[in-house]
Image (cartoon, rainbow, N blue to C red; front, top):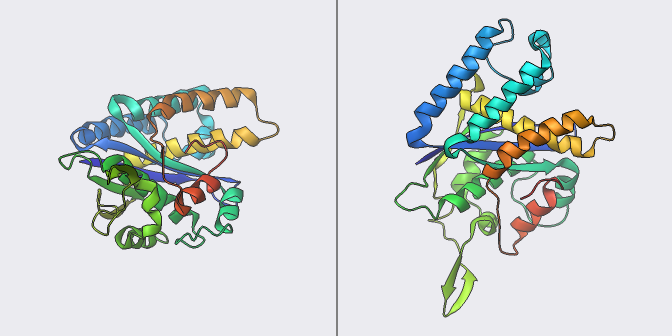
Length: 279
């Protein structure tokens, strides 16, 4: 069994980039991984009293509030350590990076998406479908996954309903190839196997109750800032290099959709993603 902890970064009033990303941990490694991050974050916060009780990466790395008194190089080194530990010993990442401009264009393109105007729900359903695609081939129930989201009271009920109702529109994101009458085809899904590797639904937790959600926040911000720097006219080369270095740590462990059938859901997400995000 697996556990995956999700957070997100970005909004329409902050810029064009929204990232939702999760860190997956095997159940038998969960206790140690959690203990390692609890110790790491707890020690850093204790070393710098007055900075808060949890790590909010955007404030932390930009030296806002109590973080202003901490040397920038120390903050950068700590964020690097978080990324390194996140993917150590088999940690896997699942996520989506959207461009709001591209998302709006995709919503108007007639793909028939079932999630209305919610970019959070669009991202949550994509990441859930990506999980389903990668986990459904793992035997002996080892691919069953508990999905834990940073608490979002407005959107979580919609995600729960989306996973429970399992709209066939999402099928193309996790269809697999098989043979029928001697031909290789994309096998149809059924009500019984839609999202069947996600245990029950997605669960919510407060970020200050989970170090792994705080780590997911850090990963999301790293990807978000990396994408933002791609299009900033006056981006500082040193900042670009720093975030590219972090992406080089994370990206080898990020799962991607890969080959998929030519279905409206696949076309939608390929259009809605940020142009620099490899889906």
